Amino acid sequence: MSSTSPSGGAAAATPMVNPFSGLTVGNDTWLTPRYIIQALGPFDLDPATPPNMPWPTATLMLTPQDDGLAVEWPKAKFTFHNPPYGRGTELWLEKAAKHGNGITLIFARTETAGFQEFVWKHPNTTGLFFISGRLKFCRIDGTVAGSAGAPSVLVAYGAEARRRLERMAASGVIEGVLVDPPRFGAANGAALKAA
Image (tube, rainbow, N blue to C red):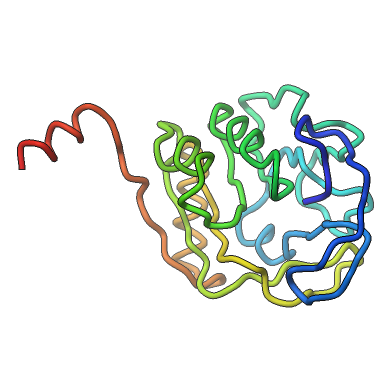
């Protein structure tokens, strides 16, 4: 992920407190560890790739200059992305959910409006893999950073994404729990009222 504006364009980098190590840095770029890409890939498209990514995440990697949030994600392209966290994350979740063919890595902030609407309640969500413990993202130079400030989840949108999460879970490469998304709606609400 990289620092971007809500529309996906580059945002001005401002010093911030690094939530992973407590150090002041000039940006909020935190890379997906290579082993996650290897366990789930290959991918056709990563629309949220930082510039100068030290390893490939997909065949086509869009940087903030390409504005991956503004461009169309072809339905046939199997997508991976670790969107910029913070304000604007919800826009990336909405786009991934509507695209419906890929895997998204985000913090497991299940109480947020974006998580509720574009993960829990979205019909294209086919599975969630909650990663055990705290993920260690990588710095822009590829070195491993400290533990993340929140737990992480891999969200599957579509049948192929679900299949890949199942394959990864069975392999044991990444520890965690694969769960089915809850299905909300009139039928479920009626069943709860009847009980």
